[in-house]
Amino acid sequence: MQQKHIHFYIAAFVAVVLVGCKLGKEYQRPQVQLPQQFSSNTAQAQSFADTNSIADIAWKEFFTDPTLQELITRGITYNNDLQVAIKRIDIANAQAKQAKLLQLPKVDLQVTGAINRPSDNSLNGLSASAFLGKSYIENYQILANISWEADIWGKIRGQKETVLAQYLQTQEAAKAVQTQLVSSIAQGYYNLLMLDRQLIIARNNLALNDTFVNVTRLLRDGGVVTTLAVRQAEAQKQTTALLIPQLEQDIAMQENALQVLTGQLPGAVARAASLNDLALPTNLSTGLPVAMVSRRPDVRTTELALVMANAQVGVAQANMYPAFTITAGTGLESFKSSNWFNIPGSLFGLAAGTILQPVFRQKQLKTQFEIAKIEREQAVIQFRQSVLLATGEVSNALVQVEKLKEQRELAGNQVDTLKQAVGNAQLLFKSDMANYLEVITAQTNALQAELNLAAIQRSQLGAVVELYRSLGGGWK
Image 1 (cartoon, rainbow, N blue to C red):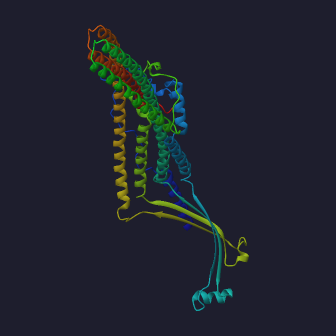
Image 2 (image 1 turned 90 degrees about the vertical axis):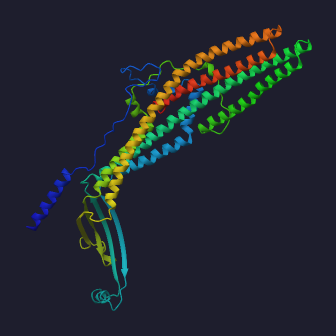
Image 3 (image 1 turned 60 degrees about the vertical axis):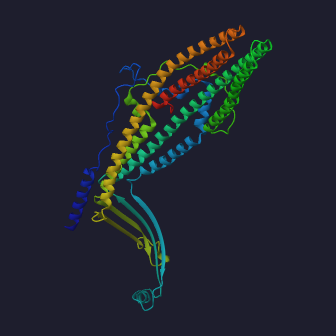
């Protein structure tokens, strides 16, 4: 009769395990605010049918300049921040492999040898003397123990889900580091080309100033202008000359920054292209906003944090429910080392089933559950905020691309106009129909306009890079 009851209990427990439900909610992406399509304030919105995005283009195809490609390749290979992120993936991968075994039983092997010398006047001492014929007690044991917890409430599955999400999060974090790294290298390279261009502009203007100084001296010697005109021309030349060491300093520092960013010692960066050689991409399609959420690594990182927080709610809830553990063991035991391995005489076994229901834990388990729910709500807010910020970055980049295109056209026209003004002013000055201040003003304005045009060209390239990054490009 007792044997029948045991079988009934075992069958009932197996049925509970088979139909046991996982506590907590299955993860579902929360609703987020997204525009129907990306557009700048002035640009025309894209068609709903246009699902292509420049972020789907691999960086080697998006950046076609050979020098920039080499810099990015070196950066991905040697940048220390990216290497640290990759090591985090290795750690998380090891943890994920270990998590796959969480539902398997734990197996321990224990070997024990003990000698106990009780008091001669104690019960153990008298018993040892009477039955063993000696004043000490020996015991030798080899035990193989198996312990398994039934995952009735999905606690172990929740732990596995957490570890897997953490592994995926480290992958996305590494992609985010690479995306930012590719963007930073491209921005630094374009800045370097801008400084090169500005240095050429400054040197050309210095030569022009030098010519004007010589002409002014000749006119002074001829009694046409005063020494003041010569001094003003020399001051203008010195102002232009001052730009050259400043730009050379900025170039050297930008080269050092690029080298460090690519994991190299500071030094010069060899380059063949100039700012004017680089052409802007003609197709800057952004795709649909909903695709950006799944493409941007930093947004995916916050979503995976939400996945982990959601799984932890189920784990915290399961901790408040009964835990069923089965333990079994077998081995060899003997009070004499000489017959320790005498089989079957020294063979023993044990088995136990335990149901543990937490009753009073000073409200720790309930508090942990409430905290887990709050942390899940916090993760939802952080995910939504990351989507909002990402959308804002794309919109800002689109506005920059659109408005910088207009600025470049206007700045180019301004440079042409002021260059003509410089030539006209010099001719009028030589004919004594304009004073030296008009020439100096025209030269100053032309210099600033050319420097400004180079800065706008660089900003245009930078805006395209930012649009590429903000859409999630750069990690492929």
